[in-house]
Amino acid sequence: MPECTNDRLISFVTNEHVLVTGGAGYIGSSLVPQLLQHGYMVTVFDQFYYGISSLLSVIADPNLRIIKGNICNTNELRTVLTDEITTVIHLAAIVGYPACDENPELAIEVNETGTANIVELIRPNQKLIFASTGSCYGAIKGLCTEETPISPLTLYGKTKSKSEEMILSKGGVCLRLATLFGVSQRMRLDLLINNITQILLNEREIDLYEADFRRTFLHVRDAAHAFCFTISHYAKMKEQIFNVGDESMNMTKKMAAQKIIEQMPFPCSIRASVTGQDKDKRDYEVSYEKIKRLGFRSTISIEKGVEELLKTLPQMSLSEIKLSKNIS
Image (cartoon, rainbow, N blue to C red; front, side, top):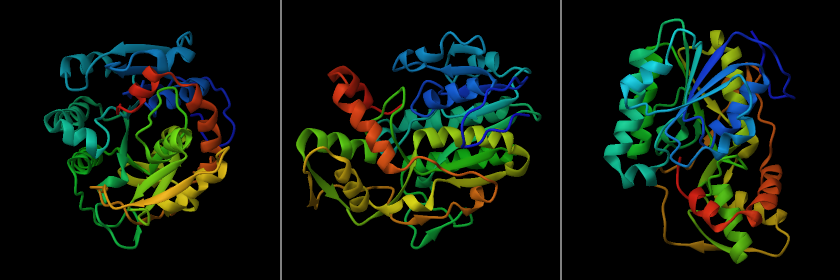
């Protein structure tokens, strides 16, 4: 079996076939090229609500298969979840509490029913890896580990925690990802680091609410690495939850904004705001020791991520920016 690490990517030839639900989204469009470069066969199963452009860079790869479909439709899902699939990476979801609050029925259908469909159809010999979130924790004081009791406060966190239960019941792996940032083929500008960078580029100042709330961050390419890492370490990780991130990026929102300002090509400022709140009440530090003991390391700093954002954001069209403010 190929060993996927956070170091340079090396191409392998393998008989493994990975099904990626939501593979055209923010994480998926970073993950799919990595899987292909490692020699995996890859099937992307996605509704392509935002189009196919995020996968065009790898469209010519003969190991890539693309199928349009909905995880809430068991007949469509059954056609792709065949015996040849060796690993299912489940990314498809309504992501974040704003999107879930906007359409609660859809959030429950996609995040819970969709996951239940995968759990029902998956075979015992197929690996199952789930994209979860730190929003499962809720309002926690102190340091969060995988043993910290969870108490999600939002519909988003609750649907993800219920999905975790389903995934674990099948012996799968749940990756609780830190708040993501960085450039991906399918951009998102609603994420904190990306959003602050865009606002500062346009306005040179930002109103920051709950500035002293502690958050934790992870570059989207490192998140993609984590799924690749989990495939090759599955025997040691199955039936478990892992926080994915890096202690060096445990910091307050104000500290993160100051790091961004240091990268800006002109003076910028932060103003405290009394309006706005994070309904997930994310204000804690997170331990990543459990996955680090297996050898996983994040490699991309906030500074490097912002450097890439500063190359990208000024060139985006208005239509691209509009799409990037929606959630995949």
